[in-house]
Amino acid sequence: MEIKGKVHCFFEQSGTFKNEFIKLGIPAEDYDIQNNFGQTDHMNDLFKAIEDAYNGKPSLFDNIKPDDLILAFFPCIYFCCLSQMAMTWGCVNYRKKTVREATELILERTKDREKFYALAIKMLTVAQERGLRLIMENPWSMQTYLKANFVKAPDLVDMDRTKRGDHYTKPTAYWYINCEPTHGMSYEKPKDVRKSVIHSKPSGKAGLCSEERSMISPDYARNFICDFILGKEQTHTERSLFDNYE
Image (cartoon, rainbow, N blue to C red; front, side, top):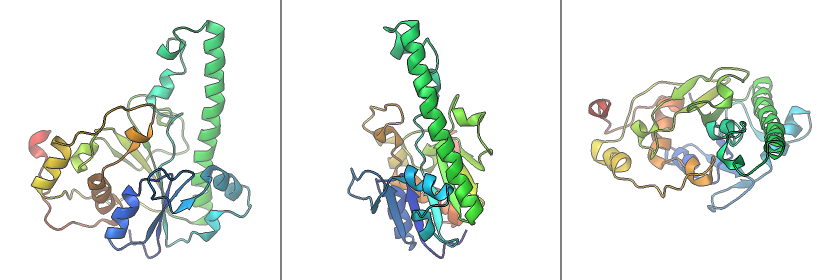
């Protein structure tokens, strides 16, 4: 894929992907409602922007061009496997609740999931109808809700993110709208990737789609961009680096 415009990183405030695009010479900006990392370029209510764009009202989508790319890390809090577990009476969070109390919490969660589910579909629809290139990311491990309930299958599933330098295996799915994934196997040279994958110690308290758990390493961001967005082979790479670790 050739990006002649800029990359709009939705729901990213860490600057991880943004900064890797910039290092590759591609302008990029972060959009989020918070700025906990001091990297958010546009503090926007993206959910409102999606609703407005879907309903034909003015929104930030009006400033995005077909030569740009939207990379959306859509919140997974109501889709991930832990959220699926919270849909059952047997969920550990309900162990001190009555059946009626647990049921009310499950029904409330169902309403919230429906809202987020609709927003995800509307975001893809806006991109599809406007001819905008968009890639949406979401977890793909165990019983994630989107596996059996979505408008299209993912175009790419990365089953082991550690192979591209991330801290977690965490299988992840990507939906491509008005574009297609490239396919590469370029990794950083051995000393860099081994240090990142084997010796890194993330701070480890991973909550339900928490900010900490959702963090992606810069190594992974760079390798993902080069392999699956730009189709760019990196210099000083070794394709078979991880053959002995599988």
